[in-house]
Amino acid sequence: MDALNHSLISDFVLLGLTSSWETRIVLTLTFSLLYLGIILGNLSILFLVILDSHLHSPMYFLLANLSFIDLCFASTTVPKMITDLLNEHKVISFQGCMTQVCFIHITGGVEMVLLIAMAFDRYTAICKPLHYLNIMNPKVCVSVVVIGWVTGIIHAMSQFSFVINLPFCGPNKIDSFFCDFPRIIKLACIDGYKYEFIIAANSGFMSMGTFFLLILSYAFILVTVWKRSKGDLSKAFVTLSAHITVVVLFFTPCMFLYVWPFPTSSLDKYLFIVDFAITPILNPAIYTLRNKDIKIAIGKLRKKSLYFFKSFY
Image (cartoon, rainbow, N blue to C red; front, side, top):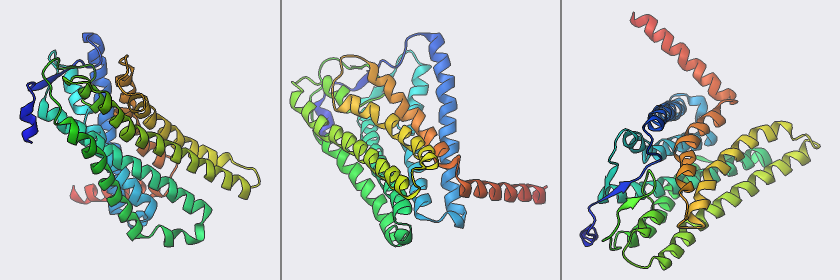
């Protein structure tokens, strides 16, 4: 961390979402409720999968890991955003900014790998049901999660390693509610063209590649179902359309910022609200709302809870 001493800037000023006090109050209440929903929704899935033996399957193992990552991903920015909405001076230390951006890219990288794994899990279950348990065995599932974390760490550190060494000696205002590589590089006291290219090649390629891979996998599943069900796609389309919607919502801000880095407008900071506050609460709803196994597990847990409280009192 000696590289931190090369910078003359000790902190950054986050300009946030709005300067209107009335709007900030409304946003504070809105994001507080959303974050509460993110915590309750994702922790509920996590505990249900751990406690209910009927949910010890590849799909729910990956879903539990996705819930954990969604909670971590949202927690990198939303709590700070909520407190900043109530403060006039939105300051984040240089170390805090670098830590935040690092964890954003680590958890974001893990989420992308998990989304690919979950799409492959659905493909295997629908297209190769007889071989499903052999393909998606516990060793493969654990390996996918490990690969996700390794990918996320490499993805983040490959960018962090050069950003941490950039000289920051001038402006320190970031027109956003969180720190990210393109915004930080823009403040460096050097020509950032080659670093723009690195960001686009790394985050941009990863975002676009994952997005198109997911869309193709869902399209392939729909085609397979269409062939096997003699043209009846209604049930499969209703299920997968919700998943595709979340994928589009999650990847649109990423591609907007990283494929075309250093945007001239501040639109990207509003788009990223979807990533940090909307998709983490949509994932538990979409993956569980129409899920019979989760509903049964919730019913069992409710009965056990009622029995416990009755016996306690």
